Amino acid sequence: MLAIAPCVAVILILLRLTGAFQLLEWAAIDWFFRLRPLEPPDDRIVIVAITESDIQTAGQWPIPDRTIAQLLDRLKQQQPKAIGFDIYRDLSVGEGHQELIEIFKNTPNLIGVQLVGSDENGIEVNPPPLLHDRDRVAASNLILDNDGKVRRGLLFAETQNGDILPSIALNLALIYLEDRGIEPENATDNPEYLQLNQAVFERWRSNDGSYIKADDRGYQIFLNYRKPKKPFLKVSMTDVLTNQVPDNFARDRIILIGSTALSIQDYFITPYDSNLLGLPSRTSGVEIHANITSQILSAALDDRPLIKSWTDEIENLWIFFWAAIGFSLASWQNYLPGKKFYYSIFQTTVTLFLSLTFLVGISFFIFLQGWWIPLVPALSSSIVSAIAAIGYIATVESKDREIIMNLFERNVTDKVAENIWENRYQILEDGQIHGQEITATILFTDLKGFTSIAEGMEARELMSWLNDYMKVMAQVVLEYNGIIDKFIGDSIMAVFGIPIPSKTAEGIARDARQAVRCALAMEKALQSLNEQWENQGKPSVLMRVGITTGTVVVGSLGSDRRQDYTVIGDTVNIASRLESFDKSIEGGICRILISEQTQKLLSDRFQTQFIGKVFLKGRKEPMQVYRVLREFHSRHKN
Image (cartoon, rainbow, N blue to C red; front, side):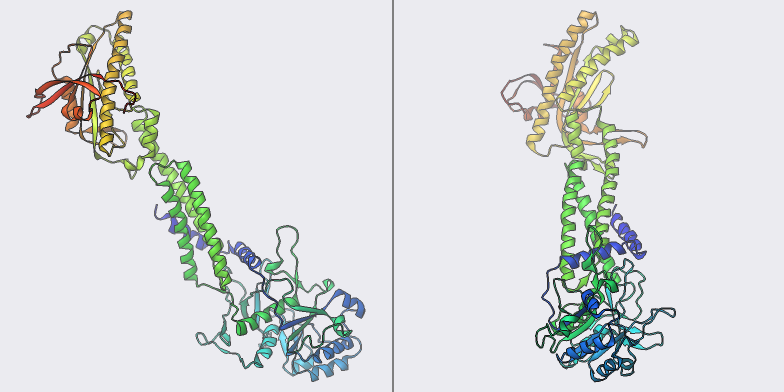
């Protein structure tokens, strides 16, 4: 059973390596993004959006060169730190191309873009030639996951010619940081990583986080988007051209120019764009570049965390840990003594739900600190381990119940059987009823003159007559919560105080009193039987009973094919000898003899008669023997 949690964890880890959980893990991290608190807008970045209305005003798309030149000139007058021109412009458009060239020449902090092909057959879009010649070009590529969302961003991309280009976000951020004395450098811990101030940008690899064999070409990072609600100041192209913006609104800031018009279709899906109902909303490419720029600046200047992932070894240990938690909760609840299985299932469900809620909470808290840890595999391992443990326990319980019922179902009442089942862990060990030494009370009965009666009756009639007697006496034993150990001819052996032992002196005394009450009830039952038999012309009988209390060994005896639950020990022999002592019966139809050990436990609740010190057959020392005459009736019996 202890192998359940490790096996479940290994299976789920192997499934994770196939990408089985990838979509669910992406959905979980997207959910965390949407849950986290709003952040203040980043006022270091301004977006100049070319809207649908701007295109209508310009009368065409692409926007003519003259209009773009006028826009850049107005923005240049704002004295921004850097301008990112996120529009492909490798060819002239309309009139004013020379004006645009002059603006490109005279704006040293202007960065143009090009689309880098992903492979030899990939489509590339060239940058403005003059900006390319002056090394003021950046990559504008965005990386899509298999579900179409943008969760990763580029810091550097490699062109088909082998050139390394910074992304537009990184290029703009470096210009901004340079003025603050922050230069890019190789990280101290790993020279392959970029470091800006104290922020180390760890390169995202193909199997980091929940990713399986993802395309990790270029220098990628996981995007830590700012939560929306206007994270950046946004103005339209027309507002700038008509001077409907505040004076110096872009001074010392980064400006990003790009299209937000729906007709241009420069839109992507981010973690914030998901919803449960309907189609997801979308975010423009220029806004995503603004988020990446903000992420770089915030990490270098504000210590805003970058999202990282654990190593494979730690992630696997985390999954193992939660598999063990699920297994422990299920097994602990279901092995508590006295617990009903269905109630244990309920408790397991509640405690597992609480633990998984804690797992979600701690995962979200760790996410807020900048770590993406495996939530879905951990949840799955815990749930599957719990289900597997419950299934195993149910199978074991079914087998245990079969064992117990085979041994006890015919010899105890439903109440006793239920008590035995609820406390089964006291008597079951590895699916077997183990031997245990306990204190119990043994009752033996026998019929006087049975041999003579048997000789005078036909076999079928004798069997019917004896069965009538046994049924009645067995029912009396069960009514007093005794267990019928065996029938031996016309004899009955019953035990009180098993299989769940009485662990207190009062409990042992209660068992003894129940045995004596059972014997007195047998006497009354025999009187009724005798009257019935006499009316039917059948022989009547007398009965002898022997009772003693002492140490016995209880357990199952037999083979794999058949086992019997029985009691052995000297106490059993004493009860048998008491029943057979002095076979004459005087003063009634039933003689009940008890040992001194039992008599002391009866207190003053029964009338007893001291017989004397007698030598029982096979014993060297005499024993004090008492006869039970009757019980003193009281309001409360126990």
